[in-house]
Length: 194
Image (tube, rainbow, N blue to C red):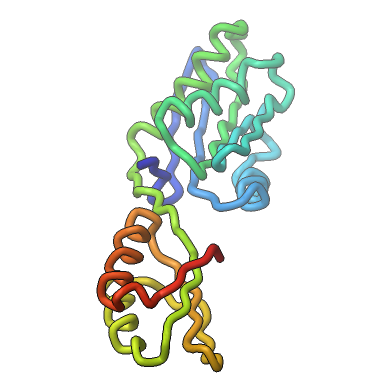
C-alpha cells in the first residue's frame, strides 16, 4: 500500500553557503499542489523549484536552474520514497559558490529525499464505490453488514422493486462485503458499478 505525508513538513540543508529549504505536503489534486507552491515559494529567493506526484499525474519545474537539475531530482525523491499525492518545493538562496549541474542535482534531490524520508506518513486508502439492490425484506440484514464493514451510504432509494444503495468503502474490504451480503441474503442482492 502506498503512503502520503501525514501533514506539511520542512527541512533545511546548506551546501557551499547556499541554503535549501524544502517544504512538502500531502495534496489531492494538481490545483492543490500548485496552490501550495504559490503559498510557500519565497519571491525573494534565488529559485523555487518543485515537483508533485498524484497517481499517474506529475509535474516539475526547475524555476531558472539548468534544465533537469532541480525539478526532476525532486520528483525522483518523491518516487524514491514511495510516496503519492505529495508536493515538494525546494527554495534556494544562492550562497555565492556555483555548484555545477551534478551538485545541483545532489542538493535538490538530496534535500527533498531527506525531508520526505524523515516526515511522518500515513497510508493512502483507496476507496471503491458500487451500487446494490435488494428486496425490502433484506433491509435489516444489509444494513447490519454495511455498519459492520463501516461502509458509507452515499445514496439510498426505495423503489417499487426494493431498495437501491450506493456504497463507498475501502477497496480492500469491498469483495468481502459483497460475499457476506450474498451469503446473508441467500444471493438476493444484486451489484453494479457506481
